[in-house]
Every structure is written in C-alpha cells, then in structure tokens.
Length: 158
Image 1 (tube, helix red, strand yellow):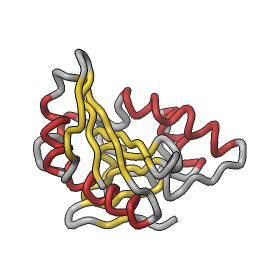
Image 2 (spheres, one colour; image 1 turned 90 degrees about the vertical axis):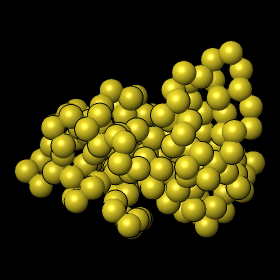
Image 3 (cartoon, one colour; image 1 turned 30 degrees about the horizontal axis):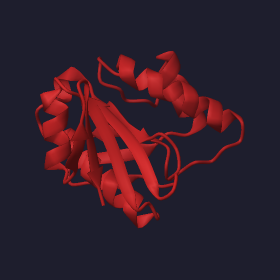
C-alpha cells in the first residue's frame, strides 16, 4: 500500500514493524516523531492491528495510517478493519500541539475518499457527546451526524 498525500499531510500505512515501534514507543533512527507522539488512544487501536498483521492478515487499505506533517508523525487515523456489509468504521487523533490547524479534517476527508474508492459504501465514526472538537472535525470533513444517544454522537459519509 502506498502513502496517501493531501495538501499538507502524508497518511502513511503502518506495516507490522512500524506499528510495533509505535506501540512500544521505540522509534528507530529513521523515524521522525513529534515529541508527544504517540498518544494513548493511538496505542489502543494498535494492539488489535498488530495482532491481525502477526496472524498474516493484510487488511490494507483498511488498516491504520500514521499522519505526518512535514515528514514528522503527529497522529494516527485508520479503520477498524475491512468493510462489513459495505460499512467501514474509522477513528483518528492528533497530538495536542498539532490540533487546531485543520489536519484532522484534512486527513479524515482523504481517508473517507480512499475508503469509498476502495469499495466501501459508507464510512462511519463516532465521538463522545462532549467532544465538540471531534464533532466539528467530522462535519468539516463532510460527514453527517446520523444519530446520538446520551453519551455518543454517530456520523456517516457516503
């Protein structure tokens, strides 16, 4: 799988060795990571991804990607696996110092476009009810709020 380039970012698909380094917080000499990278939520997504890759699963393009700005890792974005009945779920996050510049919406928009191009019919994501920044990001990326409950807001793009 090749990188996905946006106007300001590179979404780099994580291979097994890279994913393990991120999970272990052990960059190689060639890795360029921002000082706050990786963040806790990204580590949660990496464990099942690494397990899948170790079992021989090749889920790209529906895997995890490192978000790079000017060649430096500042966050992560990716899918929870291949589409199920045409629907694929994704999540994203940036280190604190990279927030507020529109990077998350730019990355999200690019990955939604890629998912639809690779055969997904719908891309879904959700966020906590009080996470207004994430909700705004999903709306900026072209997602639509489809429902909410007492804790979570659900979004979709087609």
